[in-house]
Length: 351
Image 1 (cartoon, rainbow, N blue to C red):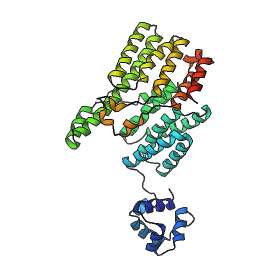
Image 2: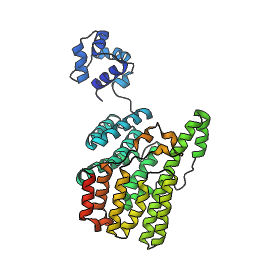
Image 3: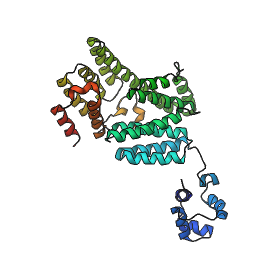
Image 4: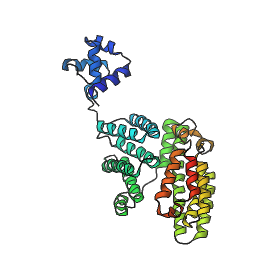
């Protein structure tokens, strides 16, 4: 960040006008205005006084600080998420600028990569443009995969492996998978107990609800994959039994209702049953448009006033575009391409 931007931002943070800064420093208001625009710079003798006035140190004034706090990163990531819903390109540009400002802040870079990776999947960008952005996201993750922060490093390695699997680059995926420890001690209950002692039972229960949601979401993904493998090996009855279990699990653990339909869509897709596929796609699209009232479940009711509890309000057009792109590009759905009924369904939802 340029020094002018720092002066402007911190002046506003402390609630001063340009006129007040000018009067304090004994300069003209237009001079302060020019500093903030980057047209001129303060005299070197004024810098220590200016820093004190803005309640920052010289490192902050010159943007020498290399790390952001977790709170600052969280705020930026939330802003980035909001921007990405309107324009992925604008979000990406903001991300690049922030990374240039803090090139050594691994948590920031990983968090940006994670947010933009999800946003890119749901974007309606052309494939060529998506590929360019995907390359940039991979390059950021490769940087943070060598982080000294173990949590950032492991998360980056895992995401890289997932991306290479998605790209069907299995050798590259295996390189990163081999870097992930086979056994990880689950300290969730111990952390919950400590949190209960330090911050109270409600805070500990909120933490545990989040861990539970993460765990059941993972199990849901495992079940989807098992259904696919049973279909691949011809065990159709087993696939149907697992689909029923997955259906019940969604209700039991308060997951998003569209997840009940996915198992049956997978089965119809593997069996190349166009009629059932289209029927299930209609159901998926209908359910995906509805909000996921996560806090209605007794398992996650503490999420009522949280950011997570308010964020699941339906995928909207982004989900429709993503599903249409998957059907268009995934070999397993080749039999559906050119289906006029299906094209009409997608057109209807994208109005």
